[in-house]
Image (cartoon, rainbow, N blue to C red; front, side, top):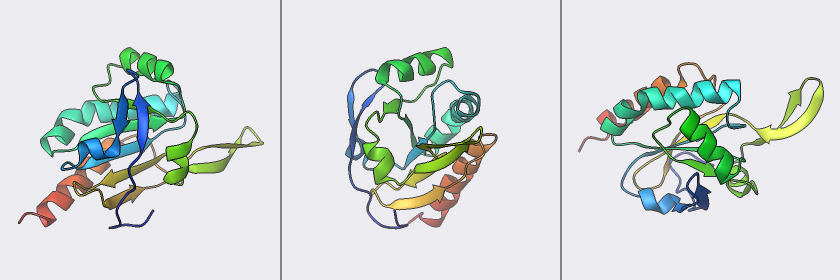
Length: 158
């Protein structure tokens, strides 16, 4: 993934089992945050951060989408449990995770496992990659993304 390059379209199911394409959101900036697993501590903090910042992100014109390898059903339970106001996408076969290069080898209690590295991508209204946040710390991350979008918007006022 290269900054200012077009992001290839993808298709996934959301937590309501609807088909979602990245191109559905053309014309708006898209915040695409990848998280390791629904309803785990760090992922809950991150997802709730986006929930709590959602109105401000909407005012900035952004669409928020969460992605993990969970099933649509697990995503729906997670979304309902924490009252998340944005769709969660199910990438069960890791196709989009691999497209975005977020699958990494991690050390889990001394064992090497392959999993999603917590990463957020901000995709512009024209579907070019604007920002990448790697090695995300869940606390305060949504505010960091919001600040980045506001900065981008003020730089691109024409």
